[in-house]
Amino acid sequence: MNNKPALIEIQGTAEAGSFSRTQLNQILDLAEAGIQELFVAQSQVIS
Image 1: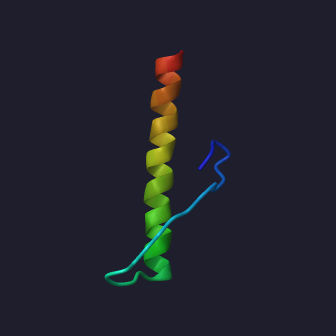
Image 2: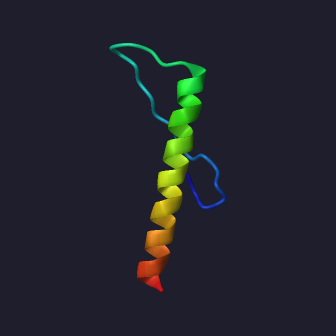
Image 3: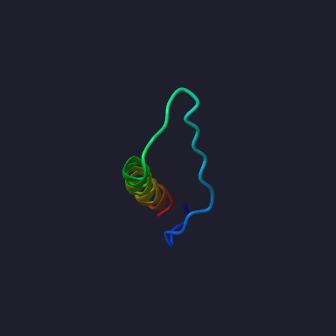
């Protein structure tokens, strides 16, 4: 994701099983929250 936030790339494999659309949405929500935390930490270091 970038800071818009817009998706740049998604990679997901489920070779040993599968995941539902609901689970995918949860994964994306967690990823977005983590990425936003990284943006905050990066801006604090840069400033």
